[in-house]
Image 1: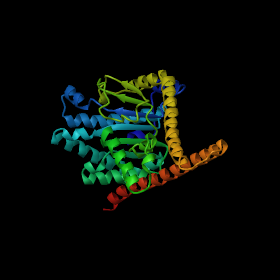
Image 2: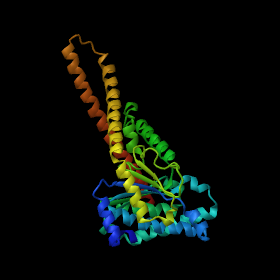
Image 3: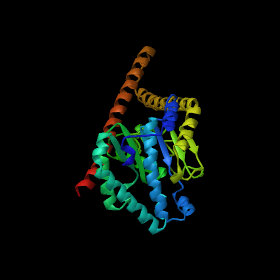
Image 4: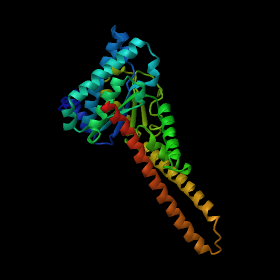
Length: 332
């Protein structure tokens, strides 16, 4: 929990942080923490030691982020693909997770003091039951905190997340909570594991690999992507500053891209609503043009209000289902 103690930087680091904060600072940064195994090989130590050093570096990096004013961080801790690694390595990573989540729960007073919300993103059912319970406890005990957020992608891939979101929408239709025409990009957004978070502004991958490895593919479509050659356990404050500078350099283009996408999404939703209204108007014979306009406007308003209400009820039911799963883990 070194990352939520009283935050201290050297004088020169503090000066550079203040300079960076004079420009736009990303509110949400995602990390692909790559290079732990290569670091272990480079230092002639066991792989498990490389992963352990990687966890320690995460704690230090989170502290730097807080000092820069970055209040939300998402990390790729364990991919579903990682289950294909050797049993020894997978077991070692699971044990490391046990230790870290146990430590979090032991120091929950610090989490409360600094209002740190922990979210674990992924298919928890793929994990050992005892780790599921530790995760559920950490998530439920910190869900009300809102000062800073740590999202841990564990047993996660983006394709798995998106297919799960589609299944959730199908469940909503099957249960009669939403209608097929309510399914949209916007609704899928809200069915993702990351629905409680804004999309990342900046994604950083270490170790020199230039790929996303099935991480936040949907959420980073309008993010600044930075690939750095440093191995994750050797990551420094200056590496983070370089990444933030690249984000600031591209800030205007990123914002413009997001605004265009938002307008296009709104247009598509409006087209869908209009198609429904026109279909319903065909069933009524109105010869008066002014009356047609009034009917059209009334039906459009009705369409939007009813869709929004259905969507709200569905998302409430989905939230209850997900929280119920976590609460069940804590009580069993």
